[in-house]
Image (cartoon, rainbow, N blue to C red; front, side):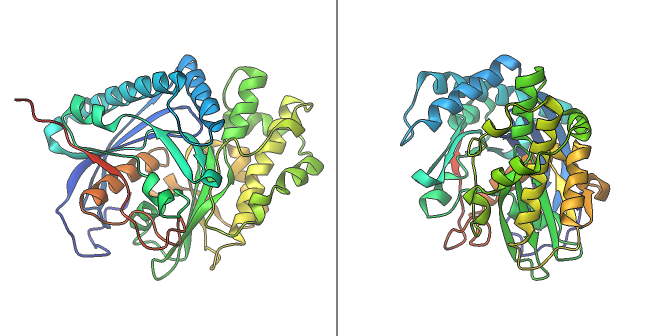
Length: 380
């Protein structure tokens, strides 16, 4: 991890400890990261904790997502309320475990960045919905919490995603530019940073979400471990071309997507291996298409997120982009922790009223400081 103390801007506050929490679109579990940072270019990772969701809770999340996606506007629903309550308490417990692991007391933490879980991202309807009760978390832990990071950006005309670029910029402050960071979570998003530290970022397609759903439905295991099934399958190029004809891929950035924006109907009759191979190629080709929208071709692509552990996906991205594609861990980063670290970093920026989204990242007209702050109430 970048330990540079050379700041992009003058510090507004000295370095503080912050916790970041991420529950990604793959619905695999909670990532909790503890960092020390000034909210600018200095970042020091301190600890990381991860906990998988149970199959039962994954199903609850899936049901909450299903209900939310049917709505014209967000309306509370019993299935969503139940999922939110459970999700919040699971995250509270994750913070407690992280702090025990790091031997840090709650009063030493300046803020928690609580992303919550996206149950629907409907930019076509001008809203996005991340469940999670930040006020309850703040009260239970006695620590300030920032949540609801995306809503203000969407309300201001932005896409609400991706938000990681501001953290990617800090991470790569001492790397040669132009450089690109590709996050392969449930969805794939790419951040390109040029020599002037200007950022262009957008969702470029699926990463693991569709592959995981396919494997779960066919095998009961929610992933293609190391890309083993895709490695022995055959890509159906006709079906792949049909999937890539989706209008999303022709859109100029900024753009963002929900995991349910694409259908798997066209692969249902395939074997497990061929379906996995075709979906993996779909994810890889989306990256290659996304590169065409960058103002400068990067010298290399640094890959974070769980998808980097899928060897077949990484190979296909290399083949289809003809670029150097590297696991970000090779540079001393922790590719599993980056998104959680990013929300810790953004929470610090929120306390300092610094922007987290920009015209080149979400399409918002002016740099925007997003997120709602919840302070624990003092007991009398």
